[in-house]
Image (tube, rainbow over the protein chains, first blue to last red):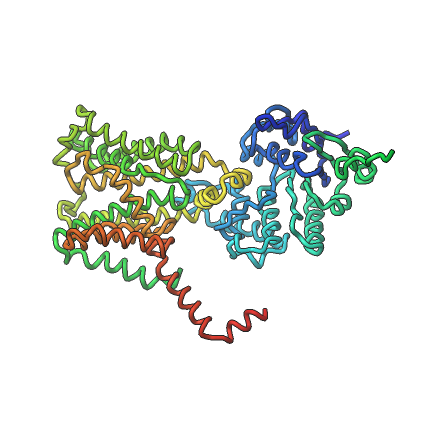
Length: 256
Length: 326
């Protein structure tokens, strides 16, 4: 039994009187694609926002690679090894595609304000640009490097978000509905990219509504409903789970 | 960018060649333009690139001016010691003002910075023991420079011009660096920037400290030029003026800051003979620039080119038809 890469326990988040997360627990094993599904409003996005430090949890533990990051600021959580994409695309729209990825690399640049003034950053800047171009090539956006990111079509903006998150060199990549608004061809392309990312040793937590894709690509799946865990298991187990079917479709009405 | 080079080259040449032939009054104006250009660049760093509004830059300007002036007049410090001290002290005040900027942005930050500027000015009026109050500080010496006398205004002009060149170089390096990129990312989307590992707090406070330090430097240059300080020179009006220079010239543009300083400082002087109509015409010009050139006067060239290109496309139906096919 190996310790999980991400261990979330008793995670609770209240917005005023509304309980968005009520003691959620999730374990993500290293080297897997872990699905997180649930009906609208079940707390999936709140889960990602809480884990990544965008909103502080009321209570609970978030342990990444042995370190508890619950309630820490987003940049600290990122440094601990968690990167993310956003459901409602949040690229740096006024900046170029390349610059967006370079922002992801910021923490690893190894040169700061001082060397910026003394002109000693030329070599380092070239290196980070090479890395960024490699990441763009991985998601098929290398030819768009100089474009303004806000001008890209929707699907490409989603791919850029993935490249930008990977640039932070995460252990765990949390993807918040990366397939939303994509056609089947684009979806296949993203799935192929996800498999490549995992093959390189990055673990993925995938929040997604496209059930067909989730079932085919995920190793394990957790299901939330009304901010609580209702099921956890392999795709086969989830498909056969009574509670999950009820959560998505409602209870069968018994005819007298 | 290379398209603009002839224009920039001409502007730089003009700035070097023309001033010795100017009248005393015009020379005074261009010296002030250069000092205000440094101030506008300092504001542009936090507002134009970082998206943090400051209407308190007159406060930094004041602290820089008074520190260098008081140290040289009452303590006998040479400029080359009082000026760095002024920069250090202004940077420290920028550090203190940087912390509110972490919690508040937009209008709230604007009001907080206005308050900062007002406090600085009130201190200079009421802390008579230190600042001599409304009587001000006089007989501030020009900086000593071996071989060249800076008591001549032409020489002082070239001195501040070299200082401006240095600040422009500094800004270009900063903006192109990882720090500048992080600052622009924060302006675009603070949450996303933080999630990508950028320390928003450190970046914002650093920007405030650097901005304040540059404004303090401008203050020292001003004090030793004008040789007499009193609190009137550092009102809210001055903060707003610096802000206007940035907006009219071009937010987030280094050349725009310099152009904006020139236009906002010199144009009212040119319009002054119009007397009663002066404010009216000045107001109309400002509104027109804001309406039609949101990127400031510096964007005039690219806006015109885009307009002409659009007109060409309209006149040439061949271009239109191929575009609809593709």
